[in-house]
Image 1 (cartoon, rainbow, N blue to C red):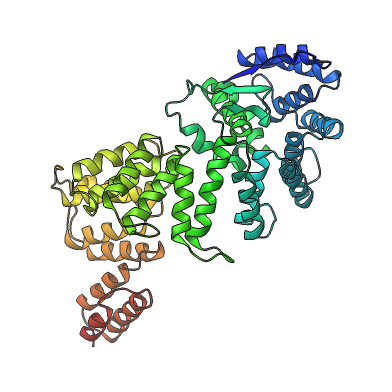
Image 2 (tube, rainbow, N blue to C red):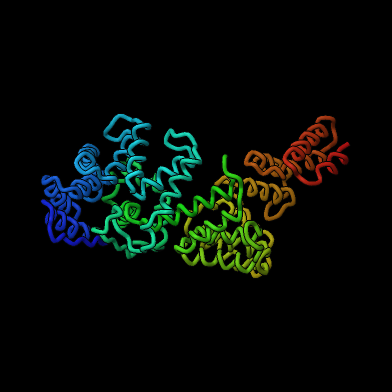
Length: 467
């Protein structure tokens, strides 16, 4: 990351030291940069105070976090300049009890004050808090929608140039040189509550010296969140689309409006929007069903770096619903997806699907029951009930393992505990296959009733056969 700062024609006291600090920061010399920032702050320089507070707050090399100094600098920038970024960070510190007494109400007041003063990160942050009911706040869709709309309707988002703190004085360039996947920065930035959390930063600052790449990456996340108004606006379009998609309380489901906001979000090349557009095209919700457009959107999302779009493409090739079934292509996408397991959301499902591919074989993939079992077990470790169900079937029918109905029964029970309710059908069938006693018939009926309760097909037929 590089910050471009030009000293004004009529500099304020401390501006020269501020400029020197930024130059050193661009080189990664945070210790030297901080000495200049703190010297600038002694003149009461607004941004000297702010940069000093941020480096102490983030704890970047070679500093450990000094939350008390960070607090003092933020308080000075707020009281002397009513700086909205300082207000935002004061809010974070009160929410976490970081150098101050924990006070969620006070923290929310500070963040909302920063939002009212126009700071884009504060607006998206407070909107998300009200959307999800985090940080002690009650869910409030009206407030959430209001703050999302405030950012969406702002007049500053047309420029794709990034400015730190929403100030044209500080132009920022991220070259992505420290990243294997440039979009990884944006995906991590979506988790701003995590990466701006004092708890996370305290933990991180204690281990940072052993990972220089990690220092650069985590530093980039903080500056990226504070500078990318474009990304914040695009994500606000996304969340408004999500509100209409899910029909949160007070908002009726409206797939047409949902698609409209996802499409607006996609204009910023936001890959997550393409993923959701692909799903709506596939289902024909809010837009005419179009399988070709669905695939185009998923591929665009993948090309722009969205990891979950890779998983969607894999599922499309596995099921053969949108494109011709191709296990080999599905496997390639799943293996690519698993390489990003640190940020993948559907890892359990991915391992389960790989298990299915190797269990069935064909379509360019050689059948391998042992690999199927291995992938099913990995999926179960990540909470996949379907993986447990697959293992139950393999033990029941002796696929890759010796036939063992007792072990199959255990895996089916495990599957139901993980939410795979189709396994109740298999449990009922195993009970009927055992020597018929009053108890086994009663257990079979109990399992079929459980299947019925969860909407499984053919439960009536099974109940009839059990009598």
